[in-house]
Length: 279
Image (cartoon, rainbow, N blue to C red):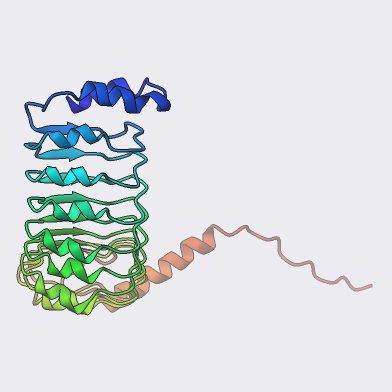
């Protein structure tokens, strides 16, 4: 049903989208899913809140900046997608949906998350990438069942020490932030399986060999002087990734020299200076 709505809405002028969607959604979908992604919505069609058995609600890629209190009637909701909208703050009503397992909040204008988010104790996956976060909200550390955290493309410079409370966390994505050091708290989380710190400003990596559950570490596009040491069988993606377990310093120097030579080769060749002629 959701795909059908999106296909038709693409041909409807923006000022008529809201009325069209409202007319189309008169009955509870059999699959208990409503997908209104890309529907140019400026306000949420409140009558959807009468579908109290709804499990999945996709509102991605609209123009929403608020949600009605009636959304709290959807107490069976497990997946809520609010990414690619205009939210500057997370609507409080979202924090009343206690069966939520997956919450997509990426590509909005969020600077923080409310304390009430801690009420979502069934949350397993949280996406907050591409917002305006300068620090990871400490309330995230209270989501005890969280398994996947996407917090890339923000302005994070460090992570709170309380993050190690999340003993169910297996995957953390931190690419495209402002980290200058590898977050120390991650060294105390041996249950992590995937760590992504791509596209930061980390210059040196500590050993990660003691992280017994680690399967993949992505550290590419950092001005690092070394690759992180890892246990056997762990995949690394980044400079010197093929070296096991540490890059040979001589090879590192040759790599840097070859890079400098390639850059010099791209410079324009200037003609030799003219020698003065004797008169």
